[in-house]
Figure 1: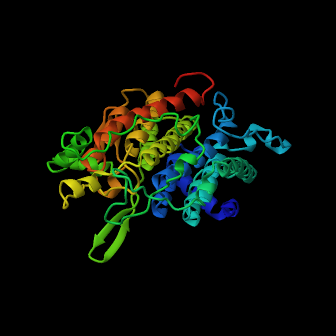
Figure 2: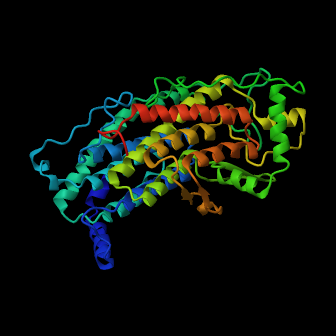
Length: 446
């Protein structure tokens, strides 16, 4: 990524094109920040990161961008003293950096974003190509300012990567393979791939705003029982009956919120994966779309990306803590064993326990954060899934989108209602925790 510093030819070429088109500004356009987010998502999809790991990449890349911008924006606060274990990052003190014109903070933020993200993905060269184009599009033609800006971005990125290195992620890579419980009612891998448990030790990752992974521990799922009329079997029957009579709108809703980063296609003996957006990536996209439509500036947009990332990150930690505590069985396993051996859900069952619903948790958490910034009745069109052949959907509010994301899992046949309802409650608690603990503005308010 450091080679971007030397690429003057590309920088001046893009700048000249912008001059001819009349699109250059004294400062980089906010659209460049949204482009950076989109390109990071593109690499995350390409590299097939699991939903929890994807949320980690978004968190640290967005923290790097925001913490860089804070150094040049009064009225906004660093994560220092608010986020767990966050380091103090101070503005540079060298003599040649003191004048305000010596650093382009927006350029520096973009570089910090790409440099940090590049260290967390597999396909760094793919992200580097995006970085070169976007940094050149900033139109910064003062070589001293350009180099100082990249130096600042590198400094902030180093601090964020050091913070990331202490979140226990590396230690969880060395854990033993997950051992499945043989108790009745416990989760087992499901068809078609029978993939091993995804991130069984994610609850050991350091959260950002939570006191612990179990801070918003939900009530237990319904007791497992195959007796007709039991609470559990009523929930199983609801999934079975609902999925056999889905209308076009319900199928569309399930597909729109599928967000399966590794959909396994099976054709005879041939297996191949279709790469798709993660649940967190969908909400990062919503955050970007709504910031653009609301005309928010650089620091506000970066703050919302960061807060959304924190809600997603802490949401997955909390949800995964419960998933591997209860280890609850998926509908597909129960229905095939006790009701209909030929039944298949509309969506592929993900490779981790059922309770609570990850979509329900992280969607509710993200919606709380976005409502706090844009209002409870902020209506928007969601274009996120159009690249995957799905239409734009309109939502009257973030809460409405989160509600639809939750119920989509029942339509898809991969969650019981308790996992959705209790997951949404869990997520709302996490979202409110983020809002209350992480105050990025000096004064309360939008």
